[in-house]
Image (cartoon, rainbow, N blue to C red; front, top):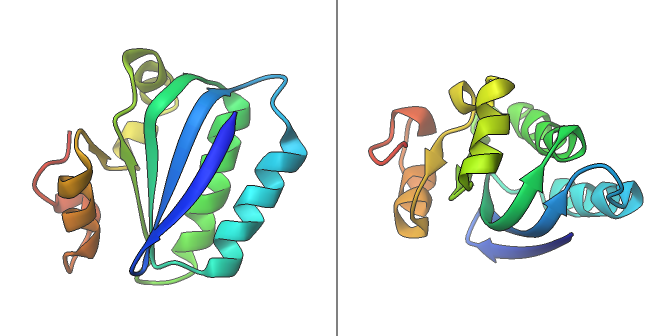
Amino acid sequence: MVIDLEYKDDICVMRLKGRFGAGSDSQYLRKKADEVKAAAPKEVLADFTEVAYLDSIGIGFLIGIYTNLLKSSEGRFALLCPNDRVRAVLDLTKLTGVFPIFQDEPTALQALRAPGPTAEAAGKA
């Protein structure tokens, strides 16, 4: 599991790679979550393009980032390109109703930058 952080204006793009599940390095996940929180971005886009697997460990990481963003009335969170296996986990946990999901990065970034709730943005999958 690897998390690369990229900043595009006020948007933090988390490029996730690998398996986010049991056996994952929880200390590494905490460190990355702390990095995102310290940067205090207004919006976060979690790029799942290279994530093969997600379970409760990864869900906990996402929820931690998301709840931190909720502290700001302007904070927003979206997901990019989860594969079918990851999408099934998100569906099972009902997070597809919470996190807007986009299939391409330009549309996701545009939606995060637009005024108003991200979930209402065009391009939500």
